[in-house]
Picture (cartoon, helix red, strand yellow):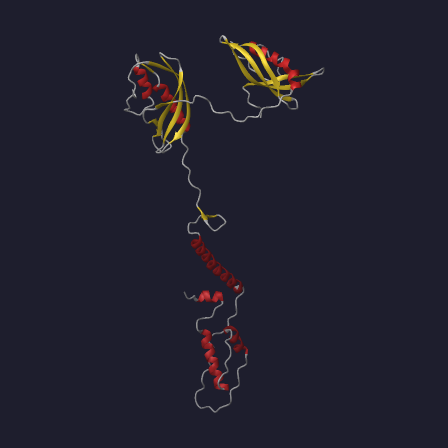
Length: 374
């Protein structure tokens, strides 16, 4: 696309064809005066024009007037005095023009190399933007619904079938047959329900495992497993969960999982012997529900045990190896309750308390189980 007059003036370019015309006129003048001109290399049009203007006009030979005197040739252009700041404005305009051209060139290269507009991974490959994550499934709501449904579904009484029907109607979709396969006979009570894992499926559906302790009228209580199918009514934030159909009774594992490799603390035999009487006195007062402040460290709070427990003996006490003013150990204690004896394990914390006359260890905390101290 040709440049306009303003752009040529800013970039310092001559008018199209101006310097060629000037060159032809100079050749004609020299041919008239000196004969055929010598071939000279093309000069800068502005420098050539400046030299022509500064050079003195050549003397013409006197001739007799033979007619009207021809008018002097008019130069193709005349120099104008440049205004202050014009050079700076011209330089700034050139810089802006070339900068714009360079910017559009870079944008064109980027569009060709990275047409997707993604982020560069440093190897020239465009990476996609962060993917949208699906909303989390309402696991807690699914477990709560499945537990409530299980309690209503596994309890029945042939003398009061309406009780079961009303309980199921509160958690089933409208127009669902409340019997859900029950023939209306027998009696069974649900003693406890424990919701478990939620397994997601397609179309916003899921399966919830529930463990229930049931007591048939003619058999002892037992634990059973129930898989309850549920689904979200919609994908929006106002969606609810619903039971989609009859569940299925499943078996439960006969044994628990294998234990992990837990560290076994080393024993401090000397500290175990030194603090054995303190541990026995503490558990005796602990079982009686009496005052334990005399054998607990200052600031310690150990609530008393419930009624019905009687201490049989402290079977064993082992203090863990360590150092410092605070230590921990394991106690195995035998209790008498419900007409039987039962042995349990406790983790006991000890703190060394100093007085003006002596030092002694006192109980600072107690918790059930054998979980190691962090």
